[in-house]
Length: 142
Length: 134
Image (cartoon, rainbow over all chains, first blue to last red; front, top):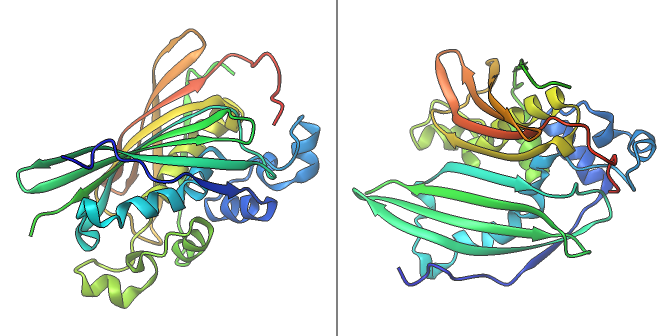
């Protein structure tokens, strides 16, 4: 389909120390690197370290922008999250600014069920790729 | 850490975990936080965020491997529906270890319901040459 390959304007997210703590508590992280600033610094990090799955926080706006794109005609009300993949690079720490670009990777219709696949590419302020995501949404038929 | 084995991770989501996760993640889809709405669309009640459950699968790997920098890749499929106040069990099996990276098959269950299936993680097993400069 025509929208495959479409990209959206990059979104930059400033990673906050308390946001990392809030996220870490919400998913039950107990490792001091995510919660205790002294422990994170003692381990050689500049600030609190984000858990890998914190990618859903800094990439959320880019993803949200895409799924409501009218060109995709993605029926949000019948959408479920089908699959997810992330590959990680250098760790993200509080104070980083992460810029995420989202691309429509694939759109397919299999027996009336729509499969929308997006790719996210996130880089830190130094241009290092901190994560690549593959987001698969399934839209049930009428 | 040899990564021959990844211990089971067991966690019971309390009745407000989806509210905290909605705030933390920004995913305020009402099927996760509004009991009445969830029932109105045919669900048994509020359900867990799939990405919260995926975070438990990730946590099982990072805790076994000794830190967040060890997890290189994680792919999952979401199936079934995760519910509140029922224990989630993440099981992981090391499929192979090659070039300092373990490939791990993982899934998350609640009772007999698999809520994350076909999870595949790639986890660094060798000590990193530096402890990171983040």
